[in-house]
Image (tube, rainbow, N blue to C red):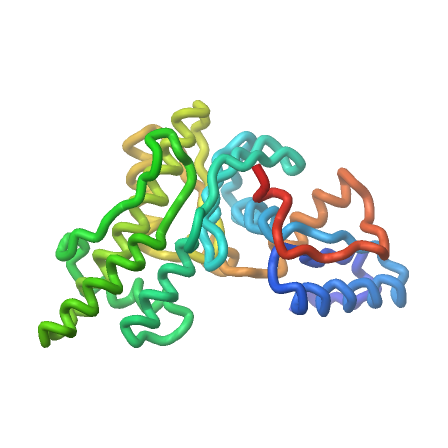
Amino acid sequence: EADKTLDDIDLLSVTKGPGLIGSLLVGLNFVKTLAMVKKIPFIGVDHMAGHLSSPVLSDIKPQFPFIALVASGGHSTLFLVESHSSIKLLGRTRDDAAGEAFDKVAKLLGLPYPGGPEVSKLSEQGNKTAIKFPRSWLAADSYDFSFSGLKTSVVNYVHKQRQQGQELNLPDICASFQEAVVDVLTEKAIMAAKHHNIKQLVLAGGVAANPRLRHYLSQRCTEEGLTPYMPELQFCTDNGAMIALAGFHAYKTHGPSPLALDVYSRSPLMVP
């Protein structure tokens, strides 16, 4: 589509982690081989750094420093991003990530995988205040997330309704569950921005495509005098463009990766 060949490529970027080791090894070894055959340098990129680069792919870009909320199937994380090479972890999920909770609730309700889009679609027809599902705020000053209790609350509600022979109102369940997730993600991100006196708030990751999260976060940012930045929908879910951009900046700072580069299942960016 770009009308380019491998001879036009100056640098290869590849995800080195976190993730499933087998999948990462396939990608990394392919790129190593391609780099050797074509004599092109390559750079290993942290997947989280890729997500943090995704808003920069849009026409309107955030400036450093900014607070970043990365919400996906495997991560619910808050970062203080001071530059491409200075990323500080503020908070992370202690159990189920936001996207993982969406998938598990969708499976419980008999909805197709991936669950996020399906729950979001049904939520549009439901009442977000119909069911009072819990919000896990943890300690007053905590930036960490926990969605396992919310997931369990939905499970208990569904089982109770079924035991009583009640018909499930799927739109209301989805809307009420989604609102609980969106509420916690948004308010913790707002809290982090205000505490660090930073006016720019970035949303990234697969869950960043959720319409309710995008709307509510934008609304709350306006109320708090913050500026929200969100990637276009095509850059929310995992994509090559964000890894390429993150690799470009990593290469400028650190140079190419060695052929001995290995993959990892846990990101160093996620370690306090």
